[in-house]
Length: 427
Image 1: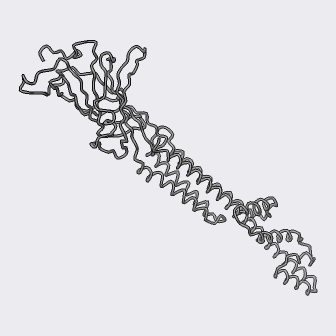
Image 2: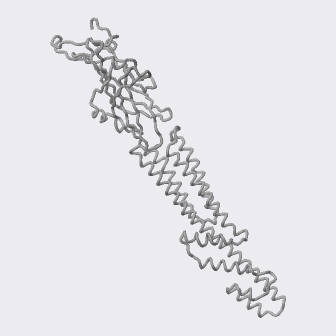
Image 3: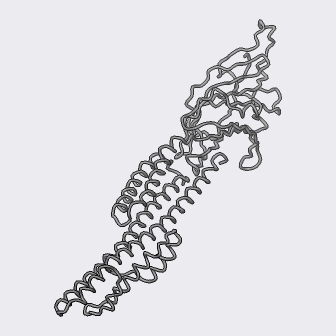
């Protein structure tokens, strides 16, 4: 070490560049902060170079070929991690190894927080490509150049010493070299890049986020089998909608706060489908309770729902609807002051036959008038029942038709989400 100056680049020819050989072995991925776009990595960093001023003949020193000396005594290259966003927290290595050929080995552990462009679109089925770039801070390739310590295929196969993180797994470490050009295009800086390909383990999020949402959607579909004329269906679906709102509050604590991941669109669409389901139940309830207004079904509704829509949902009970329609149209022709047995005979049932026989045998006008009033009251009740029955069937057929459309929309939505997430291995 006599006459050695650790402030000078250790070469005899100043025109000769010093090559720094770099190797990185990832030991653990401690975490990825999606909000701040930061990856925390613990790794073993190895660098080596030749110091032309520190050589000796082993035969003159009892065949000693390698020694360790304090780090501050020798020249150290200014190799830094370009993406580093926090001060290095790992302890400095106080010693380096030096062999008789002048090759210096500077190996140390490093805890690095580096910036990483995190793409959360496929969360939680996402891959991340984070890069660590090693380069000299001020020296160009004319003074200091960088190279790989190991071959590229050896670097790609990550070490068995890697400690798996509960959320992230390393798929591959891909090395690359390039000469970066500065802002004025006059200087080149040698850089070594290590692309760390990470894959998120999605099981936790699938169990705690996706499956509960799917179960709520299945419960919503099962709610369609409740009778539409009862108010239980609407109450049940409103309860599901409120429960899903509370579920989304819990989900917001587990989802990344940045970006618009695909799972966010999934939750929003599920919420929309639940709201549509509630509106459908309210609409069907309104149709069915038209019977309380004692209004007959319009003809265009009969044509659209009881004929065309019924065929679409495979309900072909035409005889029942024909009888109901005929009864209502015949009953509507009866007037309160009418005493004609010809009009009364249009309702061909046992009750009407009984009333007609009583009317024909009665001789006193008061008795006939009382019988006619009873007939009119009975006809009015029959008319109300027919109207109620017809509106009920309109509601049932409309409900069946909308249910099939709803199932189709849900299936298309689920298939599109599955197709999007199926691109996870290639993302």
